[in-house]
Image 1 (tube, rainbow, N blue to C red):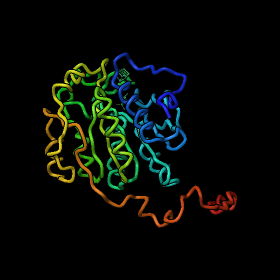
Image 2: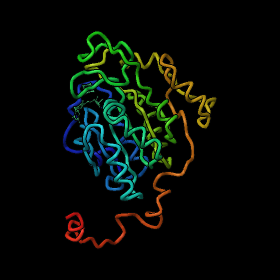
Image 3: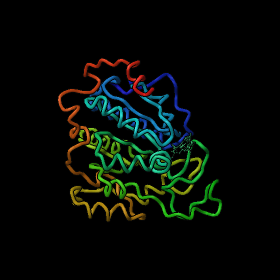
Image 4: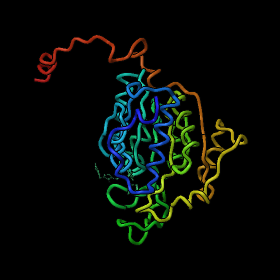
Amino acid sequence: MIVADYQTNRFPTWCPGCGDFGIWGALKTSWVKMGWNPWDFAIVFGIGCSGNMADFIKVYGFHSLHGRALPNAVGLKIANHKLPVVVVAGDGDCYGEGGNHFIHTCRGNHDISLVVHDNRVYGLTTGQVAPTATQGFKSKSTPDGIIEVRINPLALAITQGATFVAQGFAGDIPHLTQLLIDSYNHRGFSVVNVLQPCVTFNKINTYMYYREHTYKLDSSHNPQDKISALTKVMDDERIPLGILYKEERKTYEQSLNQIATNTLVEKPYNLNLNSLLNEFK
Ligand SMILES: Cc1ncc(C[n+]2csc(CCOP(=O)(O)OP(=O)(O)O)c2C)c(N)n1
Ligand code: SF4
């Protein structure tokens, strides 16, 4: 496979310079390196500028509702647990409206790879505040600055049971590509939060901001050390990039007796819809 094999004939409508381009590139390169054909896996997209990628990627995809990408992916994975399932969503989608689903997917350790475009703002709806925005951030919906403290998605993921937690940067495509590959190779729920500049509606968290505030984790960081991972993700001034936390734990699908021998989609079924409906009369 080559990168062009995953492309549709539509060119992205994202603003020039948007971090979504970098994530788009990293995703396609990661699939080439995995040796995945476009029909070997499925992607569920949320709603947002990030989710618009559904039109620019030629694989089996499902463009779900805002905040509902994860429950759709969970259903897909339970139906066919042999299929790799990737989720692409925005921070507003995943940590705001879909925050509840995020927490419970972490708890379940569903074998899904989640990639979040974290631009700390609502892009598609033109610049309202997102739950990841720093306290005081001024936006169209918070002209005097947001009152609430920000959600820390990585701390949430680690404490709620995600078994692979990493952070990448849309401005460093090779590094992000490797994180994505590592997340696919992990069995369990993996969260890759990607720092993604929204060049139009977030003038604070720019490429320059992230170049100045991020650093790469090196071999002195032990991803099995939960306390060390939490300490690092709680620091808003020095922002870590790399694999923060990794743990081996039985996945949700491995715990389901119903799919212990084969997938649900492979099981023969003899469903008589009328008799089923009659039971409700
Ligand atoms: C149920 C529902 N609520 C709200 C919306 C409106 N809406 C669409 S995209 C969006 C926010 C997008 O922000 P984010 O998820 O961060 O993605 P981005 O556009 O920044 O990539 C909202 C509020 C919707 N489409 N459906
Ligand atoms: S509004 Fe922001 S996130 Fe959306 S395409 Fe433009 S730069 Fe990207």
